[in-house]
Length: 60
Image (cartoon, rainbow, N blue to C red; front, side):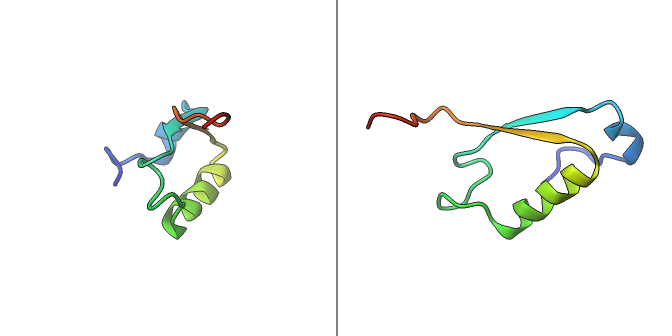
């Protein structure tokens, strides 16, 4: 759910969106189709998305 409505003129000043992944953008560890569609909309608007996590990618 968006925090605020964003119009096209607002997007002109945004270059990058960074967001946590685990439990924020995923459901049961997977991206849902709505999120994938949002990725396409962001790309088409010229925005980049940086996905970040605090989880270890190495040793368990």
